[in-house]
Length: 618
Image (cartoon, rainbow, N blue to C red; front, side, top):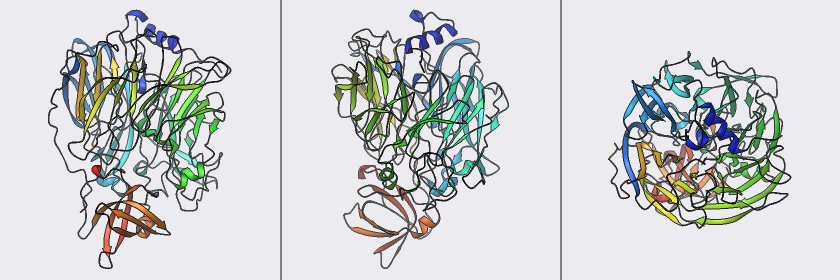
């Protein structure tokens, strides 16, 4: 199939909004700027490689909770009787803000209901803050004038998801909210029902050809006997569900009662091509490594499905998928990006990477064709794309702590070669981070790669904004951009660039950067809270690095350097056991036995591998 170029796509959007391309302000209506998920603002005329000397912090806006969703932007809206460029920020408190993009004034705020508290998540999953509310990035339709949001709400003491269509100018509901539900058929013919209590809506929403799509995964690989990956869709006009949905794992049984095959992608959005096919990457399933099946369990796979969600159209599963499952090596820790048309025999490409650090360049018209593999470093991340002054496509990778820029020099087959690198981006959490790119089309000297690092310690847990010259790898700017108290859960922050300003949403704070700002500004204090789960009498919480594993027993080296044997029997029985891998960090909750020489765990969670990020043992 063929796709329109990114130029024609962006031009069509501008014309729909009533602007000529050369004069348009840049709207950001979806995650990573477009449905290909390129992260490229190709209409930036203010910020260039040579004029960031006076760049810095202009404004800060206090918010009511942690922000996991990327901000969105629509210019020229009439709100409260005045014209504004409005920035939309959604928090884990289920609040949606409309904020003046220049002044930082809060124009509107709407709360969509009580978020689900940490205590109601499976096993006190520590990938989140104290609340889970709006987790996936919303999506905007400027034509209908709505922002579509999924809120995780505690209703009648039970978790539930609701899809809302909110007016951009009032934040009132434009249609009755839809409570999300679904059913799938397992391999034995049994009906399996969507369970909001064990499924996390983490990926950014997708709006394509009048349909809203959302992906779902798990909380911390807990409730593994119940949680499975889903792609669900709804008609934009009335929020009615599609007749079909995609259940990624339909197995009736598995060796260890692990099902999963989650869709989470560190918050990256489901992608779509011009024909409407939907793309995503799945994560791990049963740690035995034996449950993958291309028809009933598409674990560890880049996937293309039809717009009506009825058919898997193509699939790429790495040959080492069994090892990925066995070692929690999620391919689905990263997102999948589609590339605008490239020269040669394979014009339609996709790029995706995960925890093992392989960035696969795939034929998007048949994902089973792996055309190239780049080693970029472990990736809880997603790539970006832009075109240089010669019109050549460049992929911006962000695995490990490095920004790597690769240019496609291929003629008949893609051949991405390294152009520049910048190391290091500050990061004490899981490897990888997120970027976006701004440029004035393909004008030389205007391309800038923007990135937000992850915190390097447990307190104060600052995050930094970076601007990088992609031609040379030179650092053009760096500065404090916010905080991230939830050091047990990655900060998957995407910087948003539009019309000379850069926006960063973090924990309880929005920062606005631009020309004339203070490069050394002090950030306002945000309230600090204890991000640890409450313990019952006699219960303890211990961090360590896995030294060995045999049967139900896992031996860890504690932060003090001593060895501790953990019996995981109870944790496994309660499906509060995230499979650990040798050399990786875990957090165990439970009780000591045998004179403190053994620890009986009620829950075993993955932890960040850097001890500086660990909370104190207790």
